Length: 386
Ligand code: NDP
Image 1 (tube, rainbow, N blue to C red):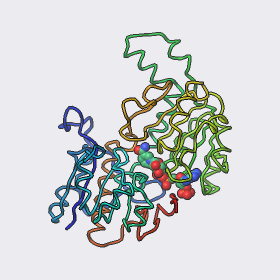
Image 2: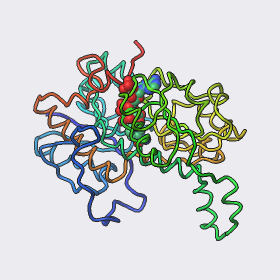
Image 3: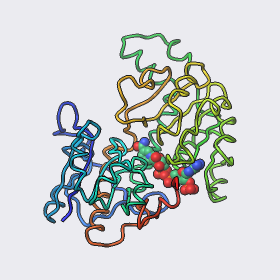
Image 4: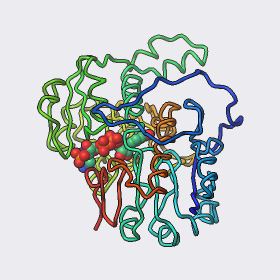
């Protein structure tokens, strides 16, 4: 029997919800491209309920306990002697989320003698030291595609909010004001702008598709080129690298995983090559950009706006400069954790666990590391240091 250690974000400050804004979710059984949404044998939760916080338990408790496994759920992951560190010592499986990442460092993996499986209830397993997972034979899996469209929607929302100066204008209303000029002195139309994505995988391509009707000019870079018919359909211009793409763009969105090739990609040097007044939207991972260079570029006017939802570390400390830098549209890490996405990543986590316990192969598209090497989606999209 396995001990499953699940690290989730805290419940709402006024307690776990007893009612919701809406009664149901649209039924989605396939993603673009045909991959099916998660197919667990059963679920023990109501889609549309809060599953990603501690009391939501990803809807896993009765499934695991009926099968004789132990489930420990905590949000306490970073303090000295945290519940996570204490319980990790004899855990067989860790389930964590990018929104509230339980950083599985090399030291922690070495200390977790029983650890065999690390599941990311979401997408993006960079909070797991993949080299250490490979070295210790730990399988890493994530629920590929579960929240890609959720993030793409957030990217489009953030682009429009920044370009149109939505958030400061909303603030004028909240503050009882009506100075139109204050609102519009930084407000533009997106129409006609050059918009580029660094990476055109599931999220990046979904962003391109959603932006095409805005009559913008679309650019992308990626390690592999998209099929020619997709380039033609969307009128895409391909660039060999981010460095080649950014000088053309009014808006840049980052949709690549964090790994050795992308860490620190956006710093003073790259910002210096962007058009003055460009917007940068990063919902991928914070460490793809240099924290202080973003702050400098906004203050100098080189960037007109920065938005996204990813920080380092998470949760971000109260004095993190991105909380107070000008012209930002940051949120906590929420874009991939809408109630809609939660239903999919909870079901996907259950599907992975069902396969694991039944000794069936985990879907290839969910695998990042397996058998001591990058595998499945991991082999395609990630790189390791060694
Ligand atoms: P995909 O794997 O579908 O796409 C990632 C793309 O990035 C792939 O096309 C990959 O190329 C490309 N890529 C990798 N390295 C580079 C590079 N050095 N330069 C250019 N392109 C590169 O993943 P998703 O689109 O679903 O997700 C992307 C990332 O977004 C995740 O890794 C995660 O970090 C983040 N994310 C954030 C969420 C949030 O809540 N904010 C939620 C979900 C994801 P190829 O495959 O061609 O090698």
